[in-house]
Length: 84
View 1 (cartoon, rainbow, N blue to C red):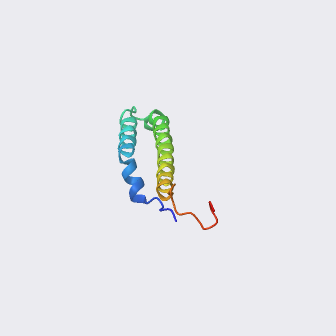
View 2: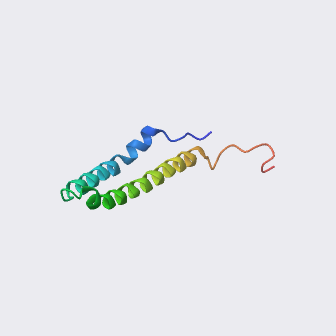
View 3: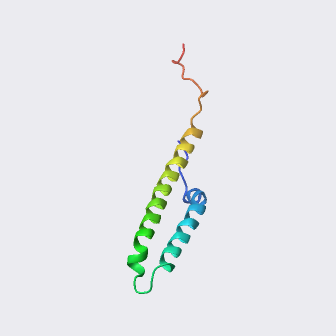
């Protein structure tokens, strides 16, 4: 049975992207005008989190696919009825 993706593997794979997300959120909120924090930052934060969500899902799929490929042996054992 193929190995499954662990939370630790996904966390490690996304460390850089998460730091980027945090930086973008902080910059958006801090760059907003007083009294306009939500209207000035909401769209930038939404876009940053949408991109992160997409990368998160893509990375999880890539890790799962990698595990499946490693579990597959192209020169694996043949059954008794194969090739006879």
